Each structure stands twice: as structure tokens, then as C-alpha cells.
Length: 288
Image (tube, rainbow, N blue to C red; front, side):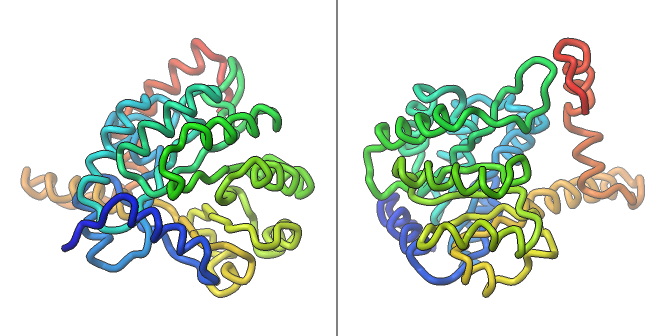
């Protein structure tokens, strides 16, 4: 299996953005999964922030993983990857200046692209993790990220949550991020094709990345491509399948017998989710 140079992988990713097709991203979480995805000829992989938190810390997706921990995992993957890897850089681990550091570190780690979202993380006291930062602050973060980039082939993709915004607000944010220089726009929270098309008709020639988590109302790759979607992330089933397989294998080794717990239930049972829920309610007044 040939390992391509970081620059070549970034050029490959840009070619995907510039194409007229839509590509299904493989969820990768360690070097082995990245090598498997490459051998199966996936065009692109993604290291999700939630998956990295589980893999590195056994922690929920509460913005608990640090930049250094995330970069270490991205570096391990980038060292052996034969396909372009997108890093889910969450909120850039802080403000615009923190985002510059995030870009610098992930570029050295070898990723081909990274997403920066406009979510307010960590959440304010008493708030959920779905609040968005003001538009001008988010634009500043994208501009800062681009300033920190050394290799112009590294793609920086601005992400927003269409579920938290009106169609008009989603379009406004996407246009502002594109005007700031983002190489593409990532959207989460799209309900169906009617929702998607109400947005994309105002974003011609904008490379889009869509996080659908397997939404059955968006399972038409040709129609996604027609709407400018170049990368689709259907979730992280491979990681959760690995958790389930590990659990079942160890149970068999102990002679305990099969279990009917699914992967989601196992992550709730064995991650530190319940502990953090208690702490959040006690110290942050978070309503779930």
C-alpha cells in the first residue's frame, strides 16, 4: 500500500471538491482504520471529534478533548494514510487565535482538510452545546485560520448548523464564510432535499460537505451531487461496530455469552458520559 505525500493528498482532496460527483467519507479513528479505508478505495476519510473523544478519552462529545490530544491522533493517522483525511477541528479549540494554532498543528499532522464550526464551545453556563457564535466572530475565525495556513493546498471548510438557523440565516452564513475565503461549506442539520435545495439554489458553485448521520431522506448521491454536495458524512458506524465487536469478543472469551446491547448503549455504559452529565447538571445547570 503506497503512502502518498501530504501535499499530494491535499491536491487529491481539492480535486474532489472541484469535481461534479459526491463522495461518501469513511469514518477513520486510528491508523488501522485509515489503512483499511484506503485499501477499500475510499476517496476520503474523516476523523470525527466525537469519535476521537471516545477513542482517546472514553469521553462524550462535550468539547473535552484537547488540541494536543486530537492532533496526536490525527498525526498517527496521517503518518500511514493513503487517502485524504478531513479533521473535524470542532470550534478550533477556542477563539480566532486558538484556531490559528489549531490549523498550524493539524497541518503538521498531515491532514488534507479541516472543518471549523461556528458552534459556541464549550457551552456557556446553563446552555446546551448547540448555540452559535455571532457571524462576525465566526468570519474572523475563518480569516484567522486561512492566515495560519502555510500549504495553500490544505482545505479549510467552514461548518454551520442549519437546524439552528432559518434558511435565510444559513445562506447568509455560508456566503459570508465563502467570501472570507473558506474552501467549502459544511452543513449539519439538513432535514431533507427540500430543505437542502432551498439553501443550495443560492450557493451556486459552492463546494459543500454534508453531515447527514445516515438520514434516509438524503440518501441519493446523484441528487446530492446535483446540489453541489461533494462530501457526505453518514456517521461513524465503523467505530461503533468496532466497539460492539470488542465487547462481544471479550464476553465470549470470559464465557459470559452473547449480549443484546447495541453500540450506542455500550458507549453510554462504558464511556464517562453519565459522570459528565451529573457534573454538568451540578456545576453548569445544563438542561438535557
